Amino acid sequence: MNAPATSRSTAQQRNGYARRAGPLRRLDAVVRILGGLLLAAGAARGAGAAATASALAVASAPSSGRTLASPPARASELASTSAPRRASEPTPAPAYERVPYVLPTESKFEVSGIAVLPDGRAALALRKGEVWILENPLDDPAQARFRRFAGALHEPLGLTWHEGALYTAQRSEITRIEDRDGDGVADVYETAAKGWGLSGNYHEYAYGPVFDRDGNLWVTLNVTIGPPAKITGHREGPPLWRGWAMRQAPGGELLPAAAGLRSPFGLGVNLAGDVFATDQQGNWWGTCPLIHLQPGKFYGHAESIPDTRRPESPVRDPGTLPSGLTVVEAADRIPGFALPAVWFPYVKMGQSTTGVVCDGTGGAFGPFAGQLFVGDFTLAQVNRVFLEKVDGEYQGACFPFMDQLQSAVLQMAFLADGSMIVGESNRGWNSLGSRSFGLERVRWTGTTPFEVQSMEVTAGGFRLTFTEPLAADLALTPEFFALTSYTYLYRQAYGGPETDTQPVAVEDVALSEDRRRVTLRCDGRRRGYVHELVLGSLRSATGQALRYNRAYYTLNRIPAP
Image (cartoon, rainbow, N blue to C red; front, side, top):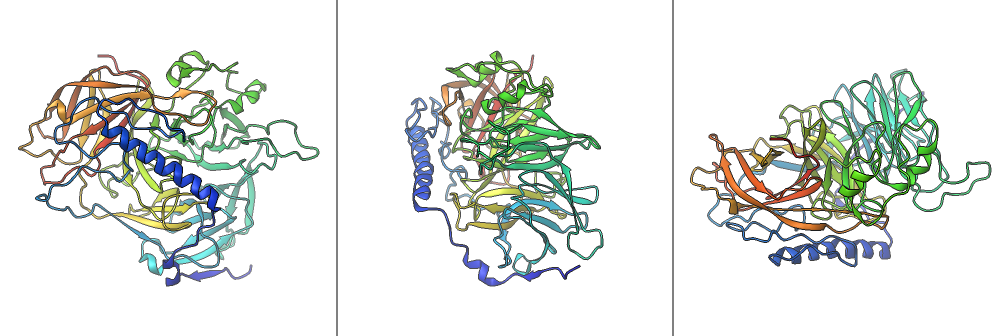
C-alpha cells in the first residue's frame, strides 16, 4: 500500500476561510435572518399582539398577553438570549468552553460525518469525498494531527462505526470502509446497501447511516426538489424512494420504511435505540421538526406519495392531501400521518436543523445525560431536546444550548472524555459564523449551568426540573411563567408562520421540597400545539440567573388524570 498522507495543522488556519457564496444569495439569506429576528423582537415588545407572518415567510413571536414578574429577555431573540443579569449578581464561571481545531490545508475540511472509533480517535467524513482520522482529539486543538484515510467518495453525508468498519452514505449507496492490512489507509470499499433512485438533480442527497438497537441500518433520502435530470435509459418521473427512510435488517436487503420526508439531514439514535431524524422547513413544513422514524408512517411531504402505491411500500397511500388545515387537523384526517415528536419554532430555535446526537456520556457533558443535541445550519448553533413517552409515543421540549459557532453546524459526536466535537460547513450557501467550514470541541468545565433541565407534561399542566435549586428567598407566583400555544399550517407553500396563537393560563405554581421542581397547573392547553414557555428572572441557590429563559414543548398527547 502507498504511504498514508499525513498533515500537521498550522497556525495559518486561525485566520479563517473565505466565504464562497454568491453575493446575491448571501444578501437574500441575510435579509431572511435579520428580517425574522427584527419581526420576532417587534412582536414580543407588543403585549397582547398576535403573531403575524412576514413577506419573507419568517414567523414573528407570539405575545403572552400578560406581564411577567421581573420580565425576562425577549423570547424571540436569537438563541443566545438569556435572562438579564443585575449588576449585583456574580458572573458565574462558564459552564462550557469551545475551542476550534486547527485544520490541515490539503483539503477543504467540510466535516459532514463524525464517528468516534473504539480507541478514541475520531473519523471525519468530508463533504467533497474523503475520510480523515483525527489522531489526538483530546489534545490541544492547535496541535491536532490528521491522517487521510479514504477518498473518491461521492458527497458522503454521515459516518458511523459498526462491527469493525466505517459506514457512510454516498449519493447512490451505503458504503462499508475498512483497513484490513492495518497500514492506516482504507483498502476495502464494499456496497453495504443500495436500492434508491438518482436522476442527477443536485438535491438528491442520502444521509446516514445509523444502526438501531436491533442492528437495523437506516438511511434517509432527500426529495429531488425541482425537475429530475433526464438521463437516457433511466426511470422517467421522480427517482425511486426520494423523501423516504429506508431500513435494512442484518443480512437482509434495503427496504422502504417510512415516507413524507423532505430534507432529512439529521439521523441519530437515543439511548433506547430508537431512530430520530430532523427535517428542514420548506414545502409542507412550516418549521423544522424532529421525527421519530417508525415503519409504515407518513410524515407529510407529498413528493414521496407516488411510491406508496408500489407493492413493496409499507406506507398506505394517503390519497389527495387536504388544504387549509393546521398540521394537527391534517394528522387527524390523513391515514398514517404522524406528527413530529418536537417542532423547532422558526428563528427562535434555528432555521435549518441538521445532525442529531444523544448524550450517552453519563454526566461527563453536564446535567443533560440522555438528552438529544441537534445542530442548526443557518444560525450556526446547537440546541437541546428533552423527550418523554406519553401513551407510547415520543414528545418533548427543545431548549437553546449554544450559538455563535464558527460556521453552519452539520454533525456532532461525543469523544471519549465526554466532550462534544462539532463538524461545520456552510457548503457555499449561507450561515452565521466567521468561517466557511470548521471543526470545534465543546467541553463542560464542571460548572453546573442554571437551566431548565427538563419540561414534562402532567395531567394538569407541566413540570419543570432545574439543574440547581431555586433561591431560598424566591417566592414563586404564576406571573413568573408565561405560556402561549400555537401550531403551523399544513400546506404546499414554502414554510409558514405560527398560527392560531393563544395564551395558556398558569393558574397555580407548586415548588418541590428540594426547590428543583416546579409544577405548573395550566388552563387552555391544546393537543398537537407547541407550548412556548418564557420564564421571569429566576435565580438559583448559588446566585446564578437562568442561562436561557425559554422552552418549547410539543404537546401531541395530554396524559389522563
